[in-house]
Length: 546
Image 1 (cartoon, rainbow, N blue to C red):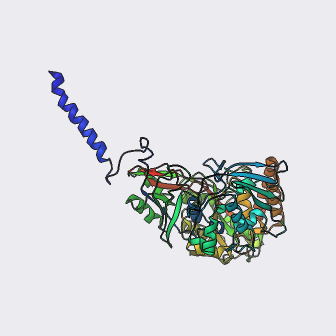
Image 2 (tube, one colour):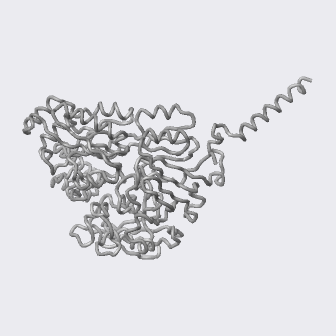
């Protein structure tokens, strides 16, 4: 009799649990499904909106260097090789490669069955077409600055130090690249997002307008760009990875203010947030339905002096300012435990970083002495440029600039802050309008060459310059060039440590921070894994609330 008495209770309990499971567990009518039991078919569909602080500068990868452009182009275009989450080289459009004994001739087997978004075939001739466009100034489609090519490959075709002898299609899906000299990081060059392979047909059709009509082989296809608002990408239905990507659409939404971006995440207007005020990490961790993400540290934040302007051509002034800025206090105040004060232009996670490098300690009195020795006992007036939008290495650029402004006032330097939107900021600093400028770098390859050569080599200090300090040291450039052309990694490490010591002595920058940038997402976003290089690939991402 007892058995019959309790049977209705168990029936009702099971019914309640089933109804709860069917109805979903959150206030927005979503599902409690974590994604673990979803089939490949279940994962298909949906739109992910990625909130960020600034717009892309352009969408032709060879003509951009900024992170906001690269995060988009990396999902449209693919490179021959790529870096995984552990910064290990992996095959992409090239499946195999080998080198001749002298290290000069490289042969690549290319992936078969791949098509560009316009339906044309990817093959060796397409890769040759892209290289010819990149390296030959006489090529009719060599339109733009192509900033990354010359400082990796020693100039363009016809220049004395140009690295490439030839690029040939030796078969439908076989490629040969012959170099003029051994180059240790050569394979890494092929994994850099700037060298995404574009459709030759699209290049011929759009020319310089490829910047606004990008066509690659990647998991997503370009659909629409509303300047300073949204970039919309659509699923590539013919992508070579079966069943992927899962998302139907991927939208990059510009929301300049950190607080407004967080509010948009909380209200469901966006699904992923990049860039936040340091103190808001606690808000995200405590909020129901949100998750905090941390991008592995692979960046540097700094303030560059324009060494072509007085008085920043004087090393005493540069050293005085290095001592006047309280870097530890800035990190404590604005990074919420997700950064460490920086000393070297190489991040600690990268081999050959010199953790024994002598730093500039905070010392106001010594800074005043150096400034007086330089002839500026009463200080001087100058400008400090900063971007208006957050960057991974500068989460609150205006507040950090104000802290630096306050520190400089202690030694008699009056610095007016000049702030502009991202694209204008890049143009102004690369053209040398600034006296001092907030800046930073997220690596695009796991080699010291990528941090030192673009940002500090003499060869990259001509307008438009990536080396915005206009640091033109022959000795420094000679060291990093020798390291680039040396195969033995121990010897390369020695050369890079010499270069770091020289950098510290010359003080072209004030090193600020190495950061672990925080991001946030809604908890229904599955398999989004922030990449150390910030070029997050969305191929595997899906939404469990579909």
